[in-house]
Amino acid sequence: METGIEPRLGKLFSAYLLACRRLRIERETDGIMARLGAIEDPEIRLYRFGERLRSLPTEAAAWTLARVQDRVADGDGRARRFGFGLLDKSRLERVMSPEGLQAIAEALQARGRPGALLFGRTPRMGEGGDDGTLPPPKEPVGYRISLARRAMAGMLERLLFDPDPRVVRALLGNPRVTEADVVKLAASRRAGPEALDAIAQDDRWIARYPIKVALANNPTAPIRIVIGLLPYLMHQDLRTLSASSSREDVRIQAAALLARRSGT
Image (tube, rainbow, N blue to C red; front, side, top):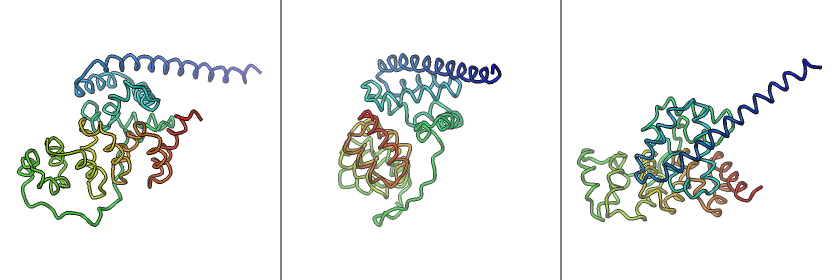
């Protein structure tokens, strides 16, 4: 009888130790979030967060990111204010190696966490452009970048859908670009994934709710961006995505968030 009990006791003790380690990491993450909240510059905030992740073993780093994601999903005000910038793969790749992020994604996937979709390898896009695809521009990219920075309203339409994301990034900083312009780009199926990623990385524009909704509903947007935006959406927009998104992962995650908010 003792032979049968001892392995079970060992498993229970291991599970207890694992739970204690995870609780410690979660409490430490809460402290880090409080300190990051005092930093106004998003780049410095990202750098400090990256320092923390690099100092941790893969499993602990995965728990840290999962804790931030949970706080965003639960509607925590501080986490929602700057959490998207900490959970965006393109930004994290500026402070972490792609291999490190992939290892974290695999650790999250092993535990069934939705964060695996945020940080893992990006699948190749299978969707094509729509009938409004523009012909390739003839001007050199450097000229188009310069033009995007100072373009007047009449020139914005052509530059908005430029195939080079560097042009799009320059255009997003143009003070003549309006929210309606960016929503149009974020919602368009002819916008390339890199252009949509540029919108997601722009703190000025991604803070605006209509742009979040447009990106989340665009089937050509990188799925990691869509999954990252779901916790920021209102109930009605989550319900729409849970019922009609063309992507199964998006439908599942949207439905899970709705259930979490309703306490079911």
